[in-house]
Image (cartoon, rainbow, N blue to C red; front, top):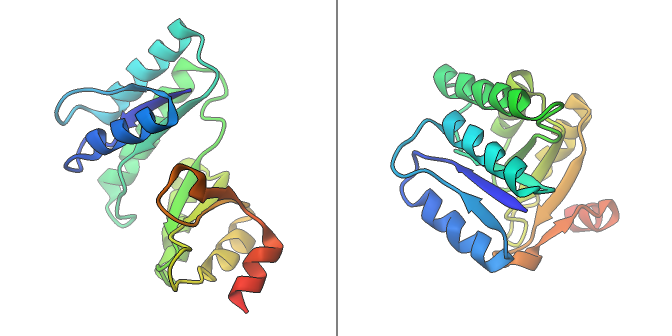
Length: 170
């Protein structure tokens, strides 16, 4: 597995991702400084092809969905991936914080329009948040909830279990 560090703007994002890839035993492709995220994706996919890598995860910057330029950047990243690997990206997941309320629905709509989401990851379910807004998101957009984050360790990202989720909601 190879992780592409395309979050080039948030302070220490790449360094944080390096720690996680080391813990997971994955490889990482990164650039120094505030490089163009699409350029990092290009180099990452070139490296993956050269190494015969089976799985590539592209980590992009979190962004405010109302900032048009940031959403256009996601489109550029998607086009770059598609140009390097036919059919890519094969999955496009939006990570939603379980503490986010109804704003998450409009966020998901705009991300879906920009890049065509194929799944949701619901993070921070280890606290008091219930994440009920994800039901509306999945229903309206017709995309599945793939994983839930139940903590901050590698094993705390788990496949979504609908029965456990409903039990926790009620």
